[in-house]
Amino acid sequence: MPSPTNQPPDDRVTVAVITRDRPASLLRTLDALSGLPERPPVIVVDNGGDDSLPGTLTDHPSAARLLRPRENTGALGRNLAVHMALTPYVAFSDDDSGWSPGALRRAADLLDAHPRLGVLAARTLVGPEGAEDPLNTILASSPLPPEPDLPGRPVLGFLGCACVVRREAFLAAGGFHPLLFFGAEETLLAYDVAARGWGVVYEPSMTAWHDPEPTGRTGRDPLIRRNEVLTLWLRRPLRLALKASARLATAAVADRSGARRALYELLVRLPAALVQRRRLPERVEHAAGLLDRRTPGDEA
Image (cartoon, rainbow, N blue to C red; front, side):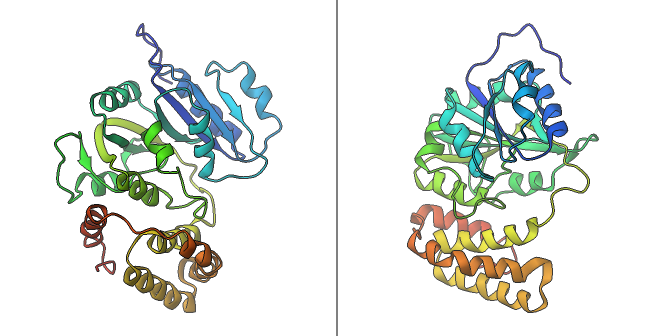
């Protein structure tokens, strides 16, 4: 665990942690957060309803505030935390992730210096060995052109447990979308932040760590596949949504990677997605199209 320095606390960034039924992992994350030189305020959203958690956190040095929704809120727990935060910026963590010393101060400095910056995606290191997350390479090689009033590399995606958001921009964009709930929910938020004129960038000078359990959580593949297609229906051209839906239906015949469940859940949510459908501004759609062309099968 990092040891505090003689630097004063940095009161510009709140860390929002979502957790569900992993108390030991959560405590490791909170231990690490309380050891950061920034000593950030922390909000924990308990999606699992662990009755022992309030007592566990009472005397913890992180002084975390605990939010206990009456049901599992998935990624929407981050929305609750942002609403409750008293700082201009909010960093996201899961109960198995956190931030390197100095990263939150660096993020706050960048957000202070760039008023149009809405989301900062960090470089993520995985496991005890600190391996590069494959997403780092993808974000670093974004084909989107640099923007003179933004740092880093413009992107339209990020890792939910390794980003810092400007609270104002996050709330203006509506936060994470309730129709997606959890799994690949970040792209839609990036679209909605960018659609309102805010910048979304990858900045490798700030580092987050992610130490997932070897087994992880089961059942995520269908959620991710469902949400990738729902995102197209909610914001992108119909031809892309139709092509992606057809590919999912074809995969469902053989039920590859839970495609049958993903298709069923897509169809259940499709009427609501059509009601809430809102096309992206032309400049954001153009940027999304540039990113599509890097992914086989997603070309316009």
